[in-house]
Length: 413
Image (cartoon, rainbow, N blue to C red; front, side, top):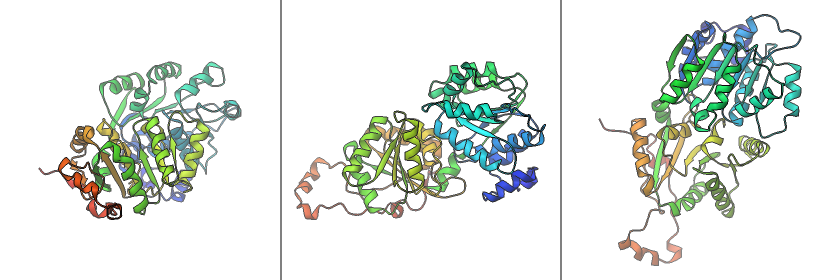
């Protein structure tokens, strides 16, 4: 199936062709016909599945085929997302897909001064992508009205709840017209998400794209069993000996991310951290440097990493294993995006072993263990090796790709 066969209009088709898109991903093939028919949609899908195009292309087509823009444009489509980085990414995609139309779009988020955002809003926009806090703030100041919204998208709903945005979302829903098309996307579907979706959706269709297996099969995965005190040494060793171009390292905490960057700096490795304590300008500057290849290693927390879209990302390192298995899949999904392959390694200390077990259960695979490395805990009976002359105790190069056997091992039936 091609995008043309989905009934996409010529101006959008031209833009998709220019971006190299010819065949829709599974979520695009399922969602676009539903949305072009005006139905509401509840979608279960993760980062890297082509979700943004799945909901933005039909919205653009509805607006392009609708009434000509009024002299003073009103917001007809609203997209809410939890992080600034993801909001920026969505807005950039909309701009690319709408390049051959006269549709106007913009993005607003907190952490920066509002003046420039307000100026663009005052000129009139058709599609607004926003984070909840800044959106409510500008609504309360009288700069934004949602009374003309015909299309509403809530993206990454599970992260919204995790970040405490549920009350903001409920406030926004009350400000929307009753008659609208609503789209609700979440990577996971716990009861709290289902309950929230019932407040947003009318007569809806439901689709579920399960990328856990496809992502896991696309990405070369491996795990090092390593004590916590040796994780920094192992990371430095890998970065110094393996030919990776761009590396995304996940830390569980903001403080931990800063410590990793400090250790890498001491080893002469250029890196930067991105997390919630950084200002928006700092985060965007670092992200741009990473995308441009000026920084080889980016250390991020999970929330800050939402919206990071770097083509040809070489490696994802899970410095700290997450205690939620789905987060592992989100992380490795930063590499191996779309149909590309990728590499991901994880560091697992003794306390994190139960997390690894949960992860393997979720993805239906055993993650290959790299046993031949010099950063394991030294057993008491082996401590005599510590007396080996320093010249003979140099860590040997660890061939990650060789040890990972090109693909993670399937769990036996």
